[in-house]
Length: 115
Length: 118
Image (cartoon, rainbow over all chains, first blue to last red; front, side):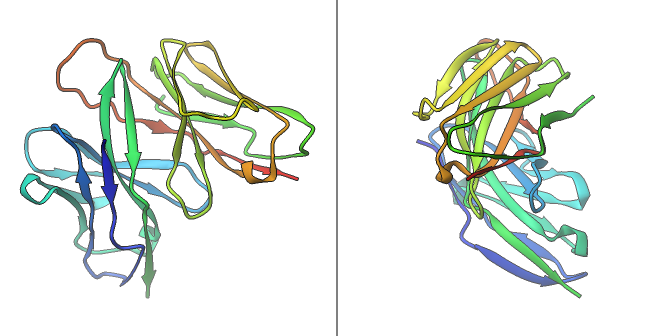
């Protein structure tokens, strides 16, 4: 069974500082990995995805993530955080089955940005 | 058009009411999903439709009844809900593929319907 662990429930960073959100996954085969962001009361927006190829993937809003198979990790990074980045971030692993994708989400990391 | 729309944005209903949530996408996606999200929790999958056929029902109580009348539309019919069903209900869609092979078909989410059961 696939699973995702986000060890940090809540992270606070200063505006302009760098950010790294941790994600560890468990999956038997090549994983499909995603990072989503959710602002309060809103739906989820895809930041980036990985399924093969270059292990460093670039996403929207200046985010990037690095897939490390040896560590079963897919950490999200941003070199300089903006106040508008404050939100909940979900790491997810997906598996393809019968023409659709079943996605399992981590428990989320809430990012607070202070001036 | 890369948007998934959901109506209504907010819904308050009593435990004896019948109501429906609506989800629409015009991206040509043939897989559509319903998720339930409680506060401070990740989304939990409820149902998956693939080519307008129900593919997954994650043991959801029968007071929730999904319907996919066509490839662009997904409904969730609600009847005799309980207060603990209050949550954000999210709809998503993803492109369809057939056969094996490496694919990634990310899900596009709507903004959700905030449901309160009184």
